[in-house]
Length: 371
Image (cartoon, rainbow, N blue to C red; front, top):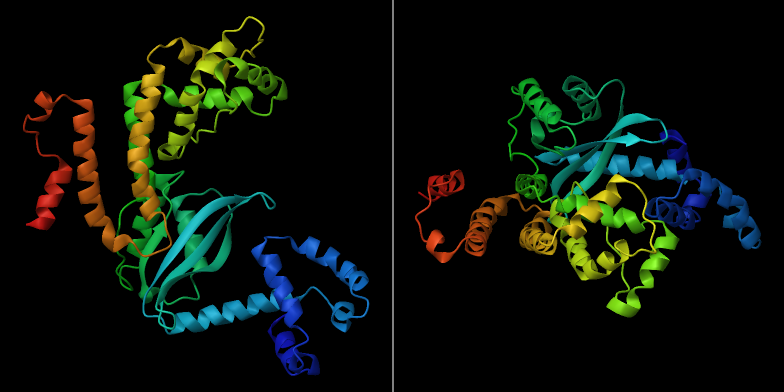
Protein backbone atom coordinates (compact mmCIF):
# COMPACT_ATOMS: atom_id res chain seq x y z
CA UNK A 1 0.00 0.00 0.00
CA UNK A 2 1.42 3.34 -1.04
CA UNK A 3 0.63 6.99 -0.40
CA UNK A 4 -2.52 7.07 -2.52
CA UNK A 5 -3.96 3.97 -0.85
CA UNK A 6 -3.42 5.48 2.59
CA UNK A 7 -5.05 8.76 1.57
CA UNK A 8 -8.02 6.88 0.12
CA UNK A 9 -8.42 4.91 3.33
CA UNK A 10 -8.45 8.10 5.40
CA UNK A 11 -11.61 9.16 3.57
CA UNK A 12 -13.36 5.81 4.14
CA UNK A 13 -16.05 5.06 6.72
CA UNK A 14 -13.83 2.51 8.50
CA UNK A 15 -11.25 5.15 9.24
CA UNK A 16 -13.85 7.57 10.59
CA UNK A 17 -15.11 4.87 13.01
CA UNK A 18 -11.54 4.18 14.25
CA UNK A 19 -11.85 0.52 13.25
CA UNK A 20 -8.17 0.35 12.35
CA UNK A 21 -6.79 1.42 15.73
CA UNK A 22 -6.43 -2.24 16.92
CA UNK A 23 -4.57 -3.06 13.71
CA UNK A 24 -2.20 -0.15 14.21
CA UNK A 25 -1.47 -1.20 17.79
CA UNK A 26 -0.83 -4.74 16.61
CA UNK A 27 1.61 -3.59 13.94
CA UNK A 28 3.46 -1.39 16.45
CA UNK A 29 3.75 -4.43 18.71
CA UNK A 30 5.21 -6.42 15.80
CA UNK A 31 7.78 -3.69 15.19
CA UNK A 32 8.78 -3.43 18.86
CA UNK A 33 9.23 -7.21 19.19
CA UNK A 34 11.17 -7.43 15.88
CA UNK A 35 8.83 -10.08 14.50
CA UNK A 36 9.03 -11.00 10.83
CA UNK A 37 6.38 -10.02 8.29
CA UNK A 38 6.00 -13.68 7.42
CA UNK A 39 4.91 -14.47 10.98
CA UNK A 40 2.48 -11.53 10.84
CA UNK A 41 0.81 -12.88 7.71
CA UNK A 42 0.45 -16.31 9.32
CA UNK A 43 -1.34 -14.73 12.27
CA UNK A 44 -4.17 -13.34 10.14
CA UNK A 45 -6.14 -16.64 9.79
CA UNK A 46 -5.59 -17.29 13.51
CA UNK A 47 -7.25 -13.99 14.46
CA UNK A 48 -10.36 -14.95 12.50
CA UNK A 49 -10.62 -18.22 14.43
CA UNK A 50 -9.92 -16.65 17.82
CA UNK A 51 -12.39 -13.78 17.37
CA UNK A 52 -15.22 -15.10 15.15
CA UNK A 53 -17.66 -12.39 16.32
CA UNK A 54 -15.29 -9.50 15.58
CA UNK A 55 -15.76 -7.68 12.30
CA UNK A 56 -12.28 -6.16 12.68
CA UNK A 57 -10.66 -9.60 12.96
CA UNK A 58 -12.61 -10.94 9.98
CA UNK A 59 -11.56 -8.00 7.79
CA UNK A 60 -7.98 -7.75 9.05
CA UNK A 61 -5.29 -7.67 6.36
CA UNK A 62 -1.62 -7.29 7.33
CA UNK A 63 -0.74 -4.33 5.16
CA UNK A 64 -0.66 -1.58 7.78
CA UNK A 65 3.09 -1.84 8.30
CA UNK A 66 3.63 0.04 5.03
CA UNK A 67 1.12 2.66 6.04
CA UNK A 68 2.88 3.09 9.38
CA UNK A 69 6.20 3.37 7.57
CA UNK A 70 4.76 6.11 5.39
CA UNK A 71 3.46 7.95 8.45
CA UNK A 72 6.78 7.88 10.32
CA UNK A 73 8.73 8.89 7.22
CA UNK A 74 6.45 11.86 6.61
CA UNK A 75 6.61 12.79 10.29
CA UNK A 76 10.43 12.69 10.34
CA UNK A 77 10.75 14.65 7.09
CA UNK A 78 8.40 17.32 8.41
CA UNK A 79 10.41 17.57 11.65
CA UNK A 80 13.76 17.82 9.87
CA UNK A 81 12.49 20.66 7.69
CA UNK A 82 12.20 22.84 10.79
CA UNK A 83 15.44 21.58 12.37
CA UNK A 84 18.43 23.90 12.06
CA UNK A 85 21.16 21.34 12.77
CA UNK A 86 21.43 17.58 13.02
CA UNK A 87 23.97 14.79 13.35
CA UNK A 88 24.10 11.80 11.02
CA UNK A 89 25.04 8.45 12.57
CA UNK A 90 25.85 5.39 10.50
CA UNK A 91 27.13 1.88 10.96
CA UNK A 92 27.95 -0.92 8.55
CA UNK A 93 27.03 -4.57 9.11
CA UNK A 94 26.39 -7.75 7.18
CA UNK A 95 22.81 -8.45 6.15
CA UNK A 96 22.65 -12.24 6.58
CA UNK A 97 19.61 -12.58 4.31
CA UNK A 98 20.92 -10.72 1.27
CA UNK A 99 24.58 -11.47 2.09
CA UNK A 100 25.45 -7.86 1.34
CA UNK A 101 26.91 -5.05 3.35
CA UNK A 102 24.21 -2.85 4.88
CA UNK A 103 24.65 0.74 6.03
CA UNK A 104 22.10 1.85 8.61
CA UNK A 105 21.72 5.61 9.04
CA UNK A 106 20.14 7.50 11.91
CA UNK A 107 19.66 11.20 12.49
CA UNK A 108 20.06 12.95 15.85
CA UNK A 109 18.58 16.40 16.44
CA UNK A 110 17.17 18.68 19.11
CA UNK A 111 13.40 18.43 19.27
CA UNK A 112 11.90 21.85 20.06
CA UNK A 113 8.53 20.32 20.90
CA UNK A 114 9.84 18.03 23.66
CA UNK A 115 13.08 19.89 24.57
CA UNK A 116 14.93 16.60 24.15
CA UNK A 117 17.57 15.24 21.82
CA UNK A 118 15.92 12.63 19.58
CA UNK A 119 17.62 9.87 17.63
CA UNK A 120 15.53 8.50 14.76
CA UNK A 121 16.15 5.82 12.19
CA UNK A 122 16.63 7.43 8.78
CA UNK A 123 17.19 4.71 6.18
CA UNK A 124 19.29 1.71 5.19
CA UNK A 125 21.45 1.36 2.09
CA UNK A 126 22.86 -1.87 0.70
CA UNK A 127 26.57 -1.59 -0.12
CA UNK A 128 27.47 -3.29 -3.37
CA UNK A 129 31.11 -4.13 -3.99
CA UNK A 130 34.04 -3.93 -1.61
CA UNK A 131 33.74 -1.73 1.51
CA UNK A 132 36.32 0.82 0.40
CA UNK A 133 36.29 4.42 1.61
CA UNK A 134 35.12 5.66 -1.78
CA UNK A 135 32.33 3.07 -1.93
CA UNK A 136 31.14 3.87 1.60
CA UNK A 137 31.09 7.57 0.71
CA UNK A 138 29.04 6.88 -2.41
CA UNK A 139 26.35 4.96 -0.49
CA UNK A 140 26.40 7.38 2.44
CA UNK A 141 25.60 10.30 0.12
CA UNK A 142 22.86 8.17 -1.41
CA UNK A 143 21.32 7.66 2.03
CA UNK A 144 21.27 11.39 2.91
CA UNK A 145 20.22 12.69 -0.50
CA UNK A 146 16.85 13.88 0.86
CA UNK A 147 18.47 15.96 3.62
CA UNK A 148 19.87 19.47 3.50
CA UNK A 149 23.61 18.93 3.72
CA UNK A 150 24.33 22.43 5.04
CA UNK A 151 22.51 21.53 8.29
CA UNK A 152 24.76 18.58 9.12
CA UNK A 153 27.16 19.52 11.93
CA UNK A 154 28.71 16.14 12.75
CA UNK A 155 29.13 12.60 11.45
CA UNK A 156 29.01 9.91 14.10
CA UNK A 157 30.59 6.62 13.07
CA UNK A 158 32.01 3.46 14.55
CA UNK A 159 35.75 3.12 13.94
CA UNK A 160 35.60 -0.68 14.09
CA UNK A 161 36.46 -3.03 12.46
CA UNK A 162 38.25 -0.94 9.79
CA UNK A 163 39.29 2.35 11.44
CA UNK A 164 41.61 3.41 8.61
CA UNK A 165 38.83 2.92 6.04
CA UNK A 166 36.34 4.98 8.04
CA UNK A 167 38.84 7.76 8.69
CA UNK A 168 39.65 8.00 4.99
CA UNK A 169 35.91 8.11 4.33
CA UNK A 170 35.63 11.00 6.79
CA UNK A 171 38.43 12.95 5.06
CA UNK A 172 36.82 12.39 1.65
CA UNK A 173 33.45 13.49 3.01
CA UNK A 174 34.89 16.72 4.45
CA UNK A 175 36.47 17.50 1.10
CA UNK A 176 33.18 16.79 -0.65
CA UNK A 177 31.06 18.94 1.69
CA UNK A 178 33.64 21.59 2.48
CA UNK A 179 31.74 24.34 0.64
CA UNK A 180 28.33 23.38 2.07
CA UNK A 181 28.94 22.68 5.77
CA UNK A 182 31.60 22.70 8.48
CA UNK A 183 31.72 19.41 10.36
CA UNK A 184 32.66 19.21 14.03
CA UNK A 185 35.43 16.66 14.53
CA UNK A 186 35.15 14.97 17.94
CA UNK A 187 37.80 12.40 17.16
CA UNK A 188 37.47 8.66 17.17
CA UNK A 189 35.06 6.60 19.29
CA UNK A 190 36.09 7.13 22.90
CA UNK A 191 34.66 3.78 23.96
CA UNK A 192 36.86 1.85 21.57
CA UNK A 193 39.91 3.88 22.60
CA UNK A 194 39.41 2.89 26.27
CA UNK A 195 38.94 -0.76 25.33
CA UNK A 196 41.97 -0.57 23.04
CA UNK A 197 44.16 1.06 25.69
CA UNK A 198 43.56 -1.82 28.10
CA UNK A 199 44.17 -4.31 25.31
CA UNK A 200 47.44 -2.59 24.38
CA UNK A 201 48.64 -2.54 27.99
CA UNK A 202 47.72 -6.20 28.43
CA UNK A 203 49.55 -7.16 25.23
CA UNK A 204 52.67 -5.28 26.35
CA UNK A 205 52.68 -7.20 29.65
CA UNK A 206 52.71 -10.57 27.88
CA UNK A 207 50.46 -12.10 30.54
CA UNK A 208 47.92 -13.73 28.17
CA UNK A 209 45.08 -13.34 30.68
CA UNK A 210 42.65 -13.10 27.76
CA UNK A 211 43.75 -16.48 26.38
CA UNK A 212 43.18 -18.12 29.74
CA UNK A 213 39.74 -16.56 30.24
CA UNK A 214 38.65 -17.47 26.70
CA UNK A 215 39.95 -21.02 26.99
CA UNK A 216 38.28 -21.46 30.38
CA UNK A 217 34.91 -20.42 28.96
CA UNK A 218 35.22 -22.68 25.88
CA UNK A 219 36.24 -25.65 28.04
CA UNK A 220 32.74 -25.87 29.55
CA UNK A 221 30.64 -24.24 26.82
CA UNK A 222 27.92 -26.58 25.49
CA UNK A 223 29.58 -29.70 26.97
CA UNK A 224 27.19 -31.25 29.55
CA UNK A 225 29.63 -34.06 30.41
CA UNK A 226 32.41 -31.73 31.50
CA UNK A 227 29.99 -29.49 33.36
CA UNK A 228 28.64 -32.53 35.21
CA UNK A 229 32.16 -33.70 36.11
CA UNK A 230 33.04 -30.20 37.26
CA UNK A 231 29.97 -30.04 39.51
CA UNK A 232 31.28 -33.19 41.21
CA UNK A 233 34.11 -31.12 42.68
CA UNK A 234 31.60 -28.96 44.57
CA UNK A 235 31.86 -31.29 47.58
CA UNK A 236 35.48 -30.22 47.97
CA UNK A 237 35.50 -26.56 46.93
CA UNK A 238 31.81 -25.62 47.37
CA UNK A 239 31.78 -24.16 43.83
CA UNK A 240 28.59 -24.23 41.75
CA UNK A 241 29.22 -21.64 39.03
CA UNK A 242 30.89 -21.76 35.62
CA UNK A 243 33.20 -19.42 33.69
CA UNK A 244 31.77 -16.35 31.97
CA UNK A 245 32.47 -15.32 28.39
CA UNK A 246 35.34 -12.91 27.77
CA UNK A 247 34.76 -10.60 24.79
CA UNK A 248 37.92 -9.88 22.80
CA UNK A 249 36.60 -6.52 21.59
CA UNK A 250 35.19 -5.21 24.89
CA UNK A 251 38.15 -5.53 27.18
CA UNK A 252 36.96 -3.21 29.92
CA UNK A 253 33.85 -5.34 30.41
CA UNK A 254 36.08 -8.36 31.08
CA UNK A 255 36.24 -7.68 34.81
CA UNK A 256 33.22 -9.93 35.42
CA UNK A 257 34.81 -12.84 33.57
CA UNK A 258 38.05 -12.23 35.47
CA UNK A 259 36.32 -12.18 38.85
CA UNK A 260 34.46 -15.39 38.05
CA UNK A 261 37.76 -17.05 37.02
CA UNK A 262 39.25 -16.09 40.38
CA UNK A 263 36.20 -17.46 42.17
CA UNK A 264 36.48 -20.92 40.60
CA UNK A 265 40.25 -21.02 40.07
CA UNK A 266 40.93 -23.70 42.71
CA UNK A 267 38.05 -25.85 41.44
CA UNK A 268 39.30 -25.60 37.86
CA UNK A 269 42.80 -26.54 38.99
CA UNK A 270 41.50 -29.69 40.71
CA UNK A 271 39.39 -30.51 37.66
CA UNK A 272 42.04 -30.18 34.93
CA UNK A 273 44.73 -31.96 36.98
CA UNK A 274 42.44 -34.85 37.88
CA UNK A 275 43.45 -38.26 36.49
CA UNK A 276 39.82 -39.18 35.78
CA UNK A 277 39.14 -36.21 33.50
CA UNK A 278 39.86 -36.48 29.77
CA UNK A 279 40.48 -33.05 28.26
CA UNK A 280 40.29 -32.25 24.54
CA UNK A 281 43.44 -31.56 22.55
CA UNK A 282 42.86 -27.95 21.56
CA UNK A 283 44.54 -24.57 21.79
CA UNK A 284 42.03 -23.32 24.35
CA UNK A 285 42.68 -26.32 26.61
CA UNK A 286 46.43 -25.78 26.27
CA UNK A 287 46.00 -22.15 27.35
CA UNK A 288 44.06 -23.25 30.43
CA UNK A 289 46.68 -25.83 31.42
CA UNK A 290 49.51 -23.33 30.97
CA UNK A 291 47.62 -20.79 33.07
CA UNK A 292 46.91 -23.26 35.88
CA UNK A 293 50.62 -24.07 36.13
CA UNK A 294 51.47 -20.37 36.48
CA UNK A 295 51.44 -19.62 40.22
CA UNK A 296 51.20 -15.86 39.54
CA UNK A 297 48.18 -16.12 37.26
CA UNK A 298 45.59 -15.33 39.99
CA UNK A 299 47.54 -12.16 40.82
CA UNK A 300 47.63 -11.17 37.16
CA UNK A 301 43.90 -11.81 36.76
CA UNK A 302 43.16 -9.77 39.89
CA UNK A 303 45.27 -6.87 38.60
CA UNK A 304 43.55 -7.04 35.20
CA UNK A 305 40.15 -7.01 36.92
CA UNK A 306 41.14 -3.97 39.00
CA UNK A 307 42.25 -2.02 35.92
CA UNK A 308 39.09 -2.93 34.00
CA UNK A 309 36.82 -2.07 36.94
CA UNK A 310 38.49 1.33 37.29
CA UNK A 311 37.95 2.17 33.62
CA UNK A 312 34.42 0.81 33.32
CA UNK A 313 32.59 3.75 35.00
CA UNK A 314 33.88 6.01 32.22
CA UNK A 315 32.25 3.76 29.61
CA UNK A 316 29.05 3.46 31.61
CA UNK A 317 28.76 7.22 31.89
CA UNK A 318 29.29 8.01 28.20
CA UNK A 319 27.68 4.99 26.55
CA UNK A 320 24.35 6.73 26.31
CA UNK A 321 21.96 8.39 23.87
CA UNK A 322 22.14 11.62 25.86
CA UNK A 323 24.23 14.50 24.40
CA UNK A 324 27.25 14.07 26.66
CA UNK A 325 29.97 15.35 24.34
CA UNK A 326 30.19 18.80 26.04
CA UNK A 327 31.14 17.04 29.28
CA UNK A 328 33.69 14.69 27.75
CA UNK A 329 36.64 17.09 28.06
CA UNK A 330 36.17 17.88 31.75
CA UNK A 331 35.41 14.30 32.77
CA UNK A 332 38.33 12.94 30.78
CA UNK A 333 40.84 15.42 32.20
CA UNK A 334 39.58 15.16 35.78
CA UNK A 335 38.62 11.50 36.11
CA UNK A 336 41.35 10.07 33.92
CA UNK A 337 44.09 12.14 35.58
CA UNK A 338 42.83 10.91 38.95
CA UNK A 339 42.82 7.39 37.55
CA UNK A 340 46.37 7.81 36.27
CA UNK A 341 47.57 9.04 39.66
CA UNK A 342 45.70 6.25 41.47
CA UNK A 343 47.27 3.56 39.32
CA UNK A 344 50.74 5.04 39.71
CA UNK A 345 50.36 4.78 43.49
CA UNK A 346 49.13 1.22 43.11
CA UNK A 347 51.95 0.09 40.83
CA UNK A 348 54.94 2.07 42.12
CA UNK A 349 56.27 2.61 45.62
CA UNK A 350 55.77 6.07 47.22
CA UNK A 351 59.49 6.74 46.81
CA UNK A 352 59.32 6.25 43.05
CA UNK A 353 56.00 8.08 42.77
CA UNK A 354 57.34 11.23 44.45
CA UNK A 355 59.82 11.73 41.60
CA UNK A 356 58.63 14.60 39.41
CA UNK A 357 57.29 13.02 36.19
CA UNK A 358 57.99 14.24 32.69
CA UNK A 359 54.95 16.17 31.34
CA UNK A 360 52.76 13.88 29.26
CA UNK A 361 50.69 14.97 26.24
CA UNK A 362 47.59 14.74 28.47
CA UNK A 363 49.08 17.22 30.94
CA UNK A 364 50.06 19.49 28.08
CA UNK A 365 46.49 19.41 26.77
CA UNK A 366 45.20 20.41 30.19
CA UNK A 367 47.58 23.36 30.36
CA UNK A 368 46.60 24.42 26.87
CA UNK A 369 42.87 24.64 27.72
CA UNK A 370 43.16 25.85 31.32
CA UNK A 371 45.62 28.64 30.54
